[in-house]
Amino acid sequence: MSAREKFRGWLRRRRKSKAVRRADADLREFVYLDDVSVFSLITSRVGAIADQFTETQTDSLKGEIQTTGGVTAGVAKGEIKSKTEGTVTHSSQVLRKATVQATFKDLYELESSRLVIQPMATSVDPPKVRTVAEIIEGAGRTAFEGWVFSPGDWSRGAMAELRVELAADPIYKMSAAFDSFVELVKESPEMFPGLEDDLQEPLAINRLLQRMLVDLIPVRARALDYVAIENSGKVLLIHRKIADQIAGGGGAFQPLYIVGVTEQRLYWKDIRQVLYGNSTFNILCRVTDDSLKESWTPVKMVDVLGGVAPDLADAIREFGLLASGFLSGAYNAATNQEQLQSEHMIEALQKYSSLLVSASGSSLTVEAEAEIAAKAVSLGDSYASHESRRSAFEDIRNLVQRATATELDSSEAAKLRTAALVQAGFSIDGQFQAPPPKPLTPAEPLGRHMNVEMVAIYW
Image 1 (tube, rainbow, N blue to C red):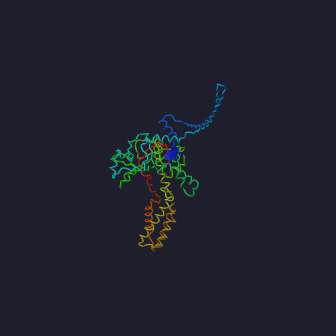
Image 2: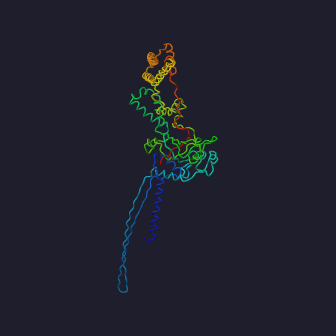
Image 3: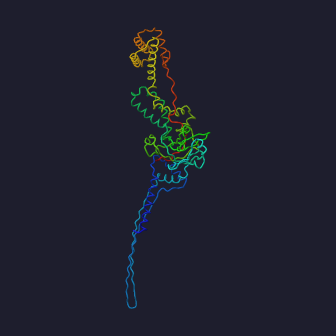
């Protein structure tokens, strides 16, 4: 093999290895891809795009046979030439349909230099800072480019790529979980006695909410590489590599959430695997708001409904918190009216025994305390009528008198019974007064929200 052939072989292998590395860099597995946005964006950049691509490869083999013969007659000489030529041609045509994934690759290569935010290479070191003030002062300087952003650095429609922890908005997750829970209650009502009636109002709100979503899934993804900070009314995005340099300054930073609405039909994977696992993905998106909001309305129709039925709109806004509290245990069997009254009746009987012991001037043995406590628990359902309550208190009084070897005056015992009922949440006539419910608070921490249009989600 000549030196030239060896060089050509090395060159072919080198080009092939470069192509493999380039293909690996472009390898993406999509979980969501909006084909309308992809084709619209690339068409706005380059104009009409090809729908089909044709590649033709032709191999030709040409052969030639030439024969020469001579004839001599006196002084005259003649020559006869015969030439035969043959050509064999083989053509192969490769036809491939342009797919949205291939078009996305072209779009990404076209837009990569225009992205206002994109993942920072791991090999690049951030500028050194010691205080939050140094970050604020560094904003806008060349050394902080790509590390510190202000919403003024982009306009509506700008494209960005961010690494996020992907999740559906809590109101969507709670709505789906609430539906499953309601079905369980209906299938096994004996497991949740009296609970089905309490679910009617939130169930009606949930049905209205699902109709307003119309197969749309609101996404609230936490940005992994950036956090937000507010200073003198100005909000900045700070790369985590810079924020981590601030010792004890973590309280000044807020999480950044990438929020937007996606279409269920455009997911390439099962949404339960994608939106409920808090997995890490990259998002290519278009910014729809040039500011970072403190809150976000995942169901856009709620704002429209607010002008017609503000009370109903408020109920839908609070549904996420109500459902979250309900499913996490804030609304459990203890909030059932009957169970709640039973628990407070037990409390009243135990308070009554303590007041009787104090009035007698004696004390109880451990065994007597255990016996009276067990008796109070067994009489917990005696709150329904005046007669049942009176009988339960009388049983406790008899146990205390026997344990202390004393006998209390009936009028004094009646006063102590009333005091025990009031302290346990009952009125003087024995009617239970339920305590006001504790306000529910959001499960998610507060943060800043970047409103976007989701173009693609991949890893």
